[in-house]
Amino acid sequence: MIVTITEQAPLATTDALLAAAVAAGLEARVMTDGHGGTLIGVDGALPADLLTLPGVGTVLERHKPYMLASREGRPHAPTVVKLGDVRIGGGRPVMMAGPCVVEGRDELLAVAHAAKAAGADVLRGGAFKPRTSPYAFQGLGEEGLKHLAAARAATGLPIVTEVMEPDQVDLVAGYADMLQVGARNMANFPLLRRVGAAGRPVLLKRGFSATVDEWLMSAEYIMAGGNPNVVLCERGIRGFDPALRFTLDLAAVPLAKELTHLPVIVDPSHGTGKRSLVARMALAGLAAGADGLIVEIHPDPDRARCDAAQTITPAEFASITRSARALHAALLAAGADDAEPATATRVPLTA
Ligand code: PEP
Ligand code: MN
Image (cartoon, rainbow, N blue to C red; front, side, top):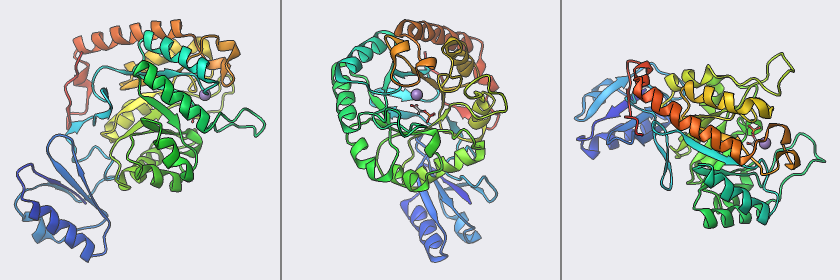
């Protein structure tokens, strides 16, 4: 059951509903909607007489199993996830860029400055890497995190970096502005629970064999742990055709945005595995409604220590950024908001 609580509701109403849920042995979670309202998700049904208490708004008895991530009962979408001054969701597309893996301090500082100059809002870079081969470079670990922190200090860019294990969450959260849960860990439920309690926004990549519903249930794990700041990332799924590394499932972007209030971004680097396709698919992702992009860049892509084939130069990324801004402005001017589901009031877009 999803119960919305109005802004003017007495606190006693929320307390009574939560107490009733506990008494009935039901899981219940409280979340604000970021616009003054509150929402209570209950995994079960509350007694009808409680639902007439002052301040109870809409009551949804049937809804998606991901009751916190669902767009149902949340008229304001997308949710805005903040990384310092950077706002992800419903506004100007957020541009994340950086190397696949942090290679060294000087290398990272150089690419971080280049990323910033090219229009990046957020710096990416892996310190702990999930590599298919156990013999491949696994990342610099904590040393890489220190380099990321140095790059943030030098450029002001917030950093997003991957965490792979529950026991690493506190360490990574000590350095990162945003925790990335990679495709291979999307269904690592102990990890999802830990990032749910870590107090940092989370970038949740879609597993390459995961359905959209499974992806949203993974977001629900994080939110149920008390963390409302989840950003979804479509990064390609496995199809039948080996022509590309993955198949970027762009229809999943507007679909996810119909189903959830969470922001959705697109990764055209892993989504194609092929550098010459990155720019086009980046723009296609934005046209599909993505709230931002995450792109792998390197000053000398052929020499990138990881994922070289899909890595582009900072100059190419700058060109994507320029096109992204122009595309966003054009979509705004064309009233693309009208394409949003009629039941939802989209947070007004800003230039
Ligand atoms: C990455 O972003 O570096 C990465 C490993 O991505 P994914 O988990 O989508 O493969
Ligand atoms: Mn990579």
